[in-house]
Image (cartoon, rainbow, N blue to C red; front, side, top):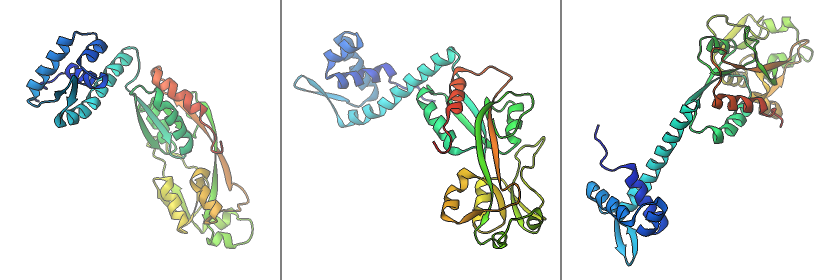
Length: 297
């Protein structure tokens, strides 16, 4: 790899000359002598082989090439400053990355609210967000693939913080045969119908959630796919309120009038990795997740 001929200090010096209006002003801002600033920029232009500045009266003015390179250099210097800041924070225990594993049924609005609030405090910390279904979240915790995890299931051996509940409804297209019965729907009525089921992404102890007595089941890997199939009139499914609010409002989907179980509440909890203490970034994100508003706030 070719070694850069120009240093970050030289780019910073060029920026100071332009931002402060001249060599003398840049020297004062940088706490250096004017001759040092002049030499730095003369040497820089010699190394690049491109004139960056010319003098008009008593003012240093950028050439066309200088304008282009100065603009690019600002990004370079900013990134270098951020890198140094991140290194300092890591030395103080600040993580470079937080791994967040979330059940795909967790309301996106709550998650987005927390992540948006976290961004100004992140100090360059990356968030690796992974979605799992049902026991897939537990697997991620036990296999040390998560620093924080949000699950709608109780995970034995872990202490979770309550993140409030979310509503799930048994729904079908408004023209579905079940809606034509004109009465409460029994388990016997459901047996002959197609049910769309979400596959548990866990490998060790997969779970079944919701009534599964239908003779015919189609299993999909995402809630979004399940909702799409149901919108097309293909079967019935238990879907989260957040995913079908507009469909219910428009009448495209209707809640099945089941004798029992057409509505259920799933209580989500936030679980930390128990194998190591959370770093400062993960603690901040965890606090923001706990503070996330409900879907109606």
